[in-house]
Image (tube, rainbow, N blue to C red):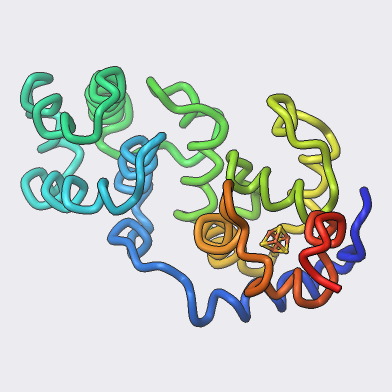
Amino acid sequence: MKSNLRNAPRFHRLLHSWARSNLREYPWRREQDRFWLLLSKMMLRRTRADQVVPIYEHVAKRYPTAEELATASAEELRALLYPLGLEWRADNIVSMVREVVERYNGEVPGTKDEMMSLPGVGDYVASAVACFAKGEPTPIIDTNVVRVLGRLFGLRLDGEARRRKEMRDAATMCLDQRQPRLYSYALLDFAALVCAASAPRCGECPFGQQGLCEYAQQKKHFP
Ligand code: SF4
């Protein structure tokens, strides 16, 4: 792994300092209930967060518990989720909600393995729910996080990057064990707002400004 950024506390200081004035507000971020976190994660899949907000709020108001949501017909839920696209997503959510109610009395199970036995729930979503609900220190590695870490550390960014050991090692090394929730929200927002896919804003980036990013050094974004 290249990069001058081998010091995790320094990484956390810079990221948290950026997050203090830039962290975004979403209704699910006020939530620590696994069911609502899981539902929001499934809604957010391949969809922009601002599109999800009104639909998430509408669903939460109309069906305030998992049991009530399970009474909605599949057609009703499909119609509610229609603006988000991806028809299979509505089917996965219907199956997940019913299973949570029938098998787990309306409570999403606490372990990642059990969560991953629910329809439509993979490793990424289960890790995110474990982290955001319970503050479990587990790295959340999605394509955005892969892009930021890959650029910072000069790791190969291709279709396999997410599965490579060096990427998982970087994600584990960077994780803030003391504040995993805040850290993970900060990293996701940093990826969306600063280290964007097509046009990273290296001039405003604390890592770039301090000469700590391999990508910025190589592209000569900084002296
Ligand atoms: S310097 Fe540029 S590429 Fe590096 S982390 Fe910051 S925004 Fe991303």
